[in-house]
Length: 66
Image (cartoon, rainbow, N blue to C red; front, side):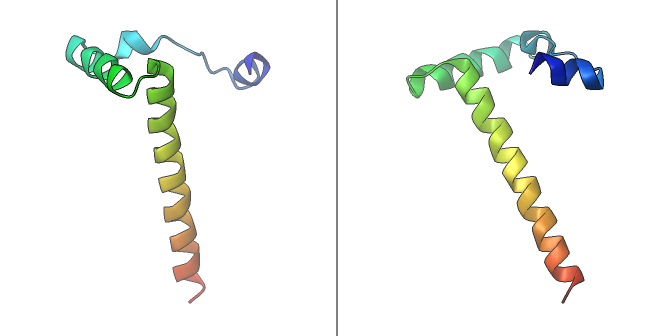
């Protein structure tokens, strides 16, 4: 993955620099409730957003061909 991020000049960054204390505590609580780590919670949120966007793009393409 490092090669891909370097190729496009995108930095990995630090998640915690972008979350305030309440958001961080929410993330910790979600990980605890789901008996998992915080990375899994973040990955789930990203995957949900990704597939929702892809679904919306498909609906738009379908409407354009109707």
